[in-house]
Structure formats: structure tokens, C-alpha cells
Length: 129
Image (cartoon, rainbow, N blue to C red; front, side, top):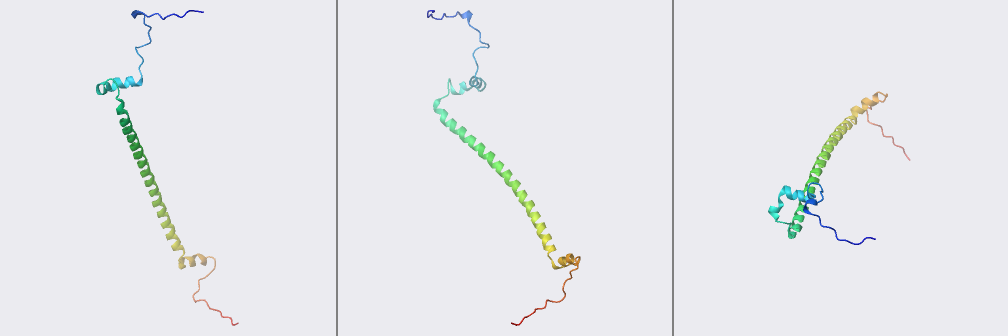
């Protein structure tokens, strides 16, 4: 077996190359683009995380609530339009029914079948017991 040895320190000129410098994460990109080190210093103060998180949560709830309310308004308008259309249909059908159930209209329809309208009132027949 081989012996344990210390790693040899690399000289400054012999550094291994990993691409274009240190690896960039999304957080380093945000720090570069937004320049948050000028506002916050070297790091994010831990005491600011809960209030900022709470405000972000409230903002998300507000956006969700607003979106849901707008969808509900659209749905209500669509249903109201349907109700108006159905009300117009019902009014039309009721008018047609009232017209067709008038005595003169019924007499016209049954006259085609040979049934005539009576001109005198019906006679009451009485039977003695």
C-alpha cells in the first residue's frame, strides 16, 4: 500500500484552469445586476428576512385575490347574459302559449277536424232518485 502524503502546494503560475474564473450562481448575478452590496453592505441582515418575507406573502395573496375576483366578475357577467337570453325565450314562449290558448285560436284549430263551437250553453240533465 502507498503511504499518506501531503498534497503539494501549486505554484502561482501552475493553477488549474476551470473556465472563466469563479463559478457564478443566480445570487452572484443578482448582486452584480442590482448592486445590492451598496444598499445592504456585505450581506443580507438576518433580521430583515421575516418582515420582507411577510410583505412578499401579503403581495402574493393580494395578487391571487385580485386575479380570482376578476375571474369571478367575468363569470358573473357571462351568467347574467345567459339569464337575459333565457328570460327573453321564456317571454316569447309565454306569449305564444297565451295566444294559442285563446278560445278563438282553439276554435280555428279544431274546425279543421270537423268540430264546431257551440252557440248555446250546455243543458243540465237532472235525474230523480
